[in-house]
Image (cartoon, rainbow, N blue to C red; front, top):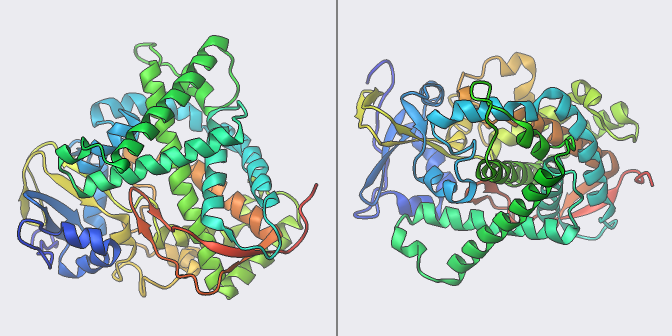
Length: 450
């Protein structure tokens, strides 16, 4: 024990394979069991040792001390194949400059303007539903998130087939990246299996689409009020230089991942939990009926959509889309009495921290009242980190929360979604914590405005 923290031993290590098989077969169950064994646990993946943080204060230390714990590790090394040196994956040396240049794209005034996009795209998705006809809400939330993200990025009205193609390619790439993280043998990535070929095709096609759009914007030189325009206009305060075409593409790819996969997963999980908890669903319906009276929600409604916000926050606790992140030590350091060598990977899992009974009693219980002010004040620092922490905290956290609460309020104002009998919902861990197929039956609560 050191500084009150304990280093432990994770159970179930196998010869040669280490703990990799357990993370493949039952990742969430295995991870949630680990805080009982210590505050910091070495895990083995073949010959590689990584260090899993299981205490919120240690997690806070790792995420906020960027000099000692830089962005990196196997997951981010693989993610760079997709997002390049974008904000989500770049090292400390590039992050300060990139964040300073990109921050204006997420200014509150722009976030407020994006609310109209959320309303329009949510209305389109709801217009596709038929009363009583079972539909895959998971797929619809993915389409909704992809359309919202694309609309934020580009005011150009991309045709629906292109949007659907982009969404599918993002799925294919993320599936491929997760496979590579769990089977980190580089030679396997070059074998021309159907999955590897699909991965390379999807990645190439996404780059082509983005490069063409960037070229079109550069040619017109017009500020269209969207994220891409803000990225193209960004200038470094010190050098006056803008972002290169490659840097622009990396940032667009980053926003596509963060804005599509994470939002889609969290929204789908929200409707699953509402359907499974009728009392909470009724509370939310009462709130949106009282606040909105059938009209479209706006940013001005957010302070009065209290139940809606707490429901979504509790979903982010139970099913954080970014369920695992990694850092790499830049110098030998000590945590919980262990000396961690330079270049080692330290793992912080929001899923582990969010399901620790020391921070959240009865952690598997869905309880939005945890986030009432008098309860939330007792949550330890570092215990609830769906968007990360410190200077590397997600730059789009306010935008993501705004979009989600507005979309949930808009949908629940007009529809009640019921589970399809017999379907077992199961978490689908990959680069994000997805819900998989989610068949539900929509029942109108009030007609949509024409």
